[in-house]
Length: 100
Image (cartoon, rainbow, N blue to C red):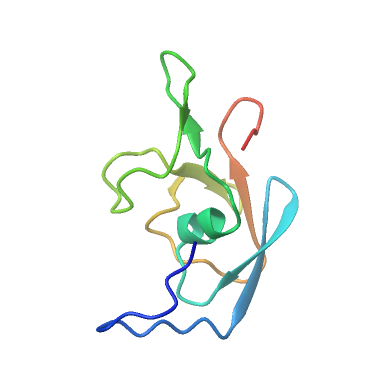
């Protein structure tokens, strides 16, 4: 799901950004956060609850909840909803089995 038109905001979806998620090639667009690009690529399972190991998806998208923490370019606990996508990023889920 991607917003194509908005009465106030201007979305520039012209420049593709290539990255990997758990080893799979993905495409996002310049200006996307990592989380937005993952969601656009069909990824809905972002993390698991600590206590019950239930799946969690993208929740607040403003950096408050911690549901979107992932490993990015070798750095653990990156808030993907606040981090802009860059060319050739390597994003790895922090879930125990790297499910999505």
